[in-house]
Image 1 (tube, rainbow, N blue to C red):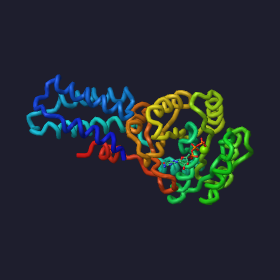
Image 2 (cartoon, rainbow, N blue to C red):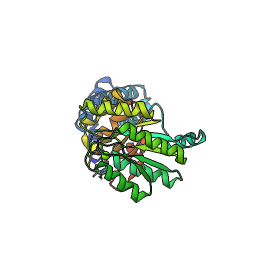
Image 3 (cartoon, helix red, strand yellow):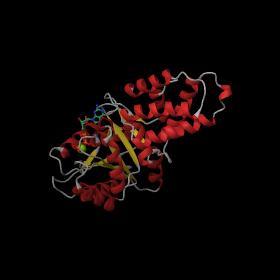
Image 4 (cartoon, rainbow, N blue to C red):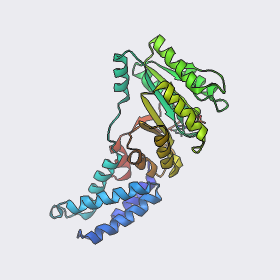
Length: 302
Ligand SMILES: Nc1nc2c(ncn2[C@@H]2O[C@H](COP(=O)(O)OP(=O)(O)OP(=O)(O)O)[C@@H](O)[C@H]2O)c(=O)[nH]1
Ligand SMILES: [Mg+2]
């Protein structure tokens, strides 16, 4: 995972030969690091902040205790990137479902993102994830736009034994979602997972449709779904969806493909929202919790 970013960062640290920690030498390392981060698709603002925090960290360290400069930079960088990857507030999905159950109401989760990022597959994966933990769910076929989308989610539902509430193509996605919520309430189902259509991010029609779904269904969780292969464009998508709809969390898919890794580093920093899962393949089991420490170990191993 994130081979390219890891190799580039490690190259810079290997090159460190100085033993003094003058602002000048720290600046030099930070400049090189910033270049490498940006080349590996870390957002410019995130790369900037990493370097600023690293400078501050190195300046305040008691250098007398360290004979190994490389090691000091490595440890400081790990600490800084960990703070960048850590959201202001964590989200525990299972805890959220439990809380809703106590209130006798289904947890409503809506998934958003541009086309092809893995929204529908993520819904199926989460349906299975919940099933394995003893929770029931229903899918709302809220993508009434793309040809084949309803059959696609129905197929997942059949495989998993999860009910799919659907209407026809062109139907009002908010109405379909509303039906699914009513179904969940009447059958005592724990979670409603709402699929939505993806179009290109500049489509104002799409944003209006998504805003309507949110207005009608009042989701407890609005999840932005992104494709790690998108690279830099992912950051503008996160910003746009956050601005137009207000996201609570993100899922980052296709981490199994050979991604540079920078985008994954930037998503939380830019949106201030946690990445709750990463998609690491096309099977239902290929869903992993996002653990910042694991990402750090991949990018900046000790
Ligand atoms: N390798 C890999 N492929 C994935 C992952 N997540 C989704 N895919 C694939 O990406 C393609 C698109 O997935 P969908 O779930 O249909 O994406 P979507 O966002 O619902 O797409 P639209 O409905 O067209 O907006 C499918 O071929 C998925 O199998 C992942 O984590 N890894
Ligand atoms: Mg879809």
